[in-house]
Amino acid sequence: MPSVRARSGNTCGSRTYDRHAASAHLADILIFPLLTTNAHILADRALSLGLDHEISAYDACYVALADIIGCPLVTADQRLVRQMANTNVEVLWLGAL
Image (cartoon, rainbow, N blue to C red; front, side, top):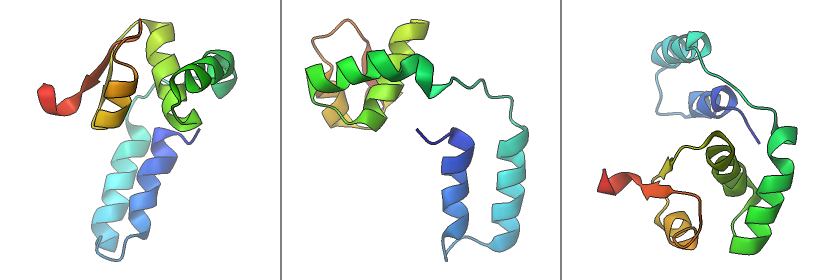
């Protein structure tokens, strides 16, 4: 699973993103105090969630993390919200907040 820092770097390759602004934003992201979790910790739970609820491994890692640390997952993915609706993991749609 890619880290938030690696994913945010993907936007730097955009042709519509100013080089100076991209560098400044990336520097901000890199110093932001993020807690990270090793994917190995999530693997078993993510596999189970992915197979049981037919969600991608990528989504399953985020759902597993929310489940393990006991907090809701907030997402803009309405399909994921629907797929996880009748489970013990709280997945909330961003648009409803």
